[in-house]
Image (cartoon, rainbow, N blue to C red; front, side, top):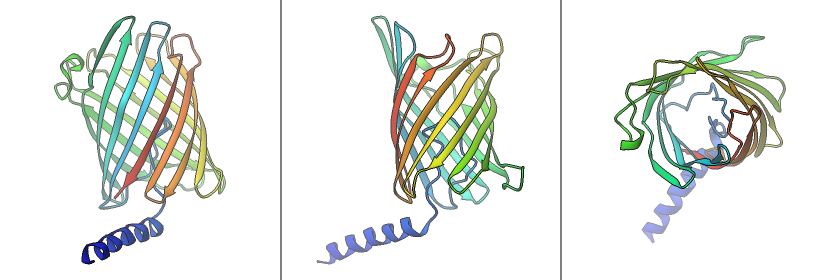
Amino acid sequence: MRKILLLFCVFGSFTIQAQTTEPIQCDRPDQTETPSIVPKGMFQVETGFTFQKNDEISTTNSLPAVLWKYGVNENFELRLITEFVSEKINAEEISGFTPVLIGFKVKLCDEKGIIPKTSFIGHIGLPNAASSKYKSDFVAPEFRFTMQHTLSDKLSLGYNLGCEWDGMTPETTFVYTLTTGYSINNKMGCYAELFGFAPEKDKANHNFDAGVTYLINNNFMVDLSSGIGITDNAPEHYIAFGFSFRI
């Protein structure tokens, strides 16, 4: 009887917490990272599975990618990214963990007039913290400035600008994203997005994606999204689904 009462107390406290905290803000499922910081003392996990067709002979699947976040204070969060990928080119298949990324997000300013809510995200890829087939030669840094405007009670505009390195060459890849988010109701939201990558010594590729999110409670969200390549050198298409929670 005591065990049953304890379970009710634990479940009840979690439900009350989910109802009293602000709804969870996630960096998935779109490519645009949110400027929001995980609440102080809370641990957040964002995980998703992606199935991508690159071209007629190759596919890349993420099974899964996981973003682990911890709120240090209202202005700063710690971040860890792990990803298991499976690739197929013709009849050859390889799989394993890509280099672990460690980093942080820091709030720079709140939204005020034309000034967007802005945060800075920085990561470093650890070359040896990966499966043997995916180890890189060098430390691979990446960073983004992530901005967001509130256009109305239901509509928002977000965008990212940044750079990343693959750990194999010193060449820079520039990254951009632009997304519009719309709140259908208190539980469901949707978005449409443009994003792209511009390597220093290669042609840029541009993509379009869209998706929906559903809030189970303020601490748990599920998502579904899909995207297509706009330019010839972009992946043909992908579909992804995932979930996020915080405790």
